[in-house]
Length: 324
Image (cartoon, rainbow, N blue to C red; front, side):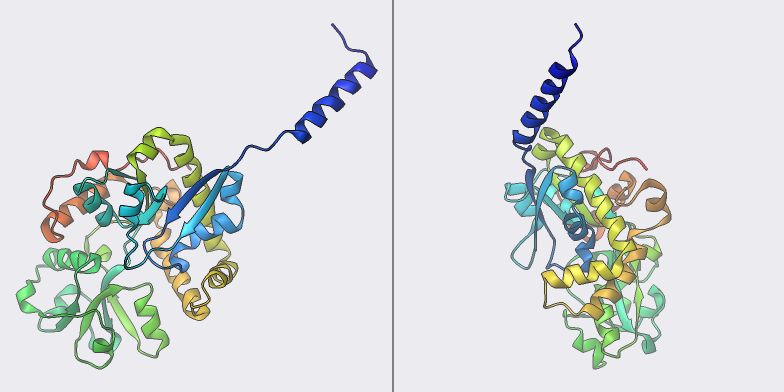
């Protein structure tokens, strides 16, 4: 049956009125728990929200800082947060303790943990630490440093070890080097006039990821479309952040006015080589290889105190990162 022109016009008008009056579908409300306080390390997530990429994906995302008493793995496992970020080691340790977490993206292809020293101390390779004094405290940087030293054939007995997190010991010459995160602590020292150099385990055969996005298994299996939309929008946020660095720094400093914009700009510039590697440029930002998860599990067994068995194949899924 063909509609007359007037009938067709009235039908179209009625359809338009219904469409305008119908309530829009509500965005899925989710939360993201960061591993630490908000800074440019979280640039990808912040810009995904600021530029509306999460909204485009039908998501209302609350980005929440971590801290000394705010553990992202525990909070996601408990259901307090939908997604979290942390490094592979922390998520594997969580799974070993029954948290049942699943990694779905890995946005820092290289881990920024390592050993920082003053440039004048001449520490350029692991063997240069022999006979030197190294400050450390338990955690990711120390675990990865021990793995690096073992690969280089440097026994810990040949290094003088001091337990301390203080950068001041390095500045005043009490120690020759210390374990640290080079994308923030080293930058802060450089800006204070202390030229630094760094040893990165990732440069000496110790592979692992940082800024890994994860969720509880119940979320991954029960809401796979939600996870896919979150990861895809986060990808857009990362790519935007690193092609609009000035805008990104301003946005993040406006959210945390305790940050030094000069330091944040320097840190964001340095981070780019951790996010964009040959692998991630070919596969897409935040893509990852499951074999690296397996290598990290071995590192934790040997140097990180992992004693409970973990079925590594169940701790991650690469299906949520969009193919490039």
